[in-house]
Image 1 (cartoon, rainbow, N blue to C red):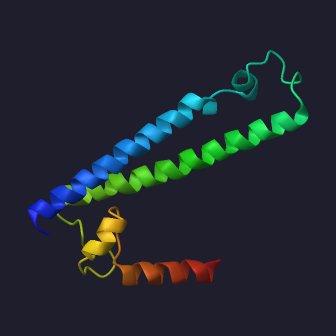
Image 2 (image 1 turned 90 degrees about the vertical axis):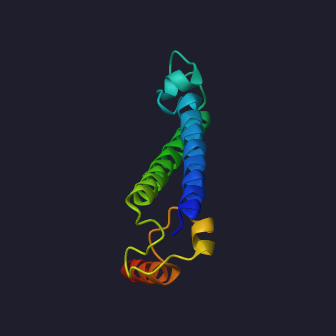
Length: 128
């Protein structure tokens, strides 16, 4: 892959990384790391209606799931940045073929060409 192309993908990955870190920061600011009482601003957890407590719990669980997914995505982005530095970016880690530019535009952290990714998805579906 040409140095110019690598720079383009590196910039794309760094932009996605910065955006993701901002989103994760917002999740933290919204009270994901506080207790239910602290998040509600209540002295006693019994002062609010049980349904409100259930909604608060659901929202906190959703925030944790988003943070977990974001953490995995951040890991994949960081791995792709390492592959750029190692000059292995754009090569399928399964078969060694070049990953198409269209795939890298859509999924810049891609590790597999579309054919190998489809095979991986089929294997996962067969295990489920």
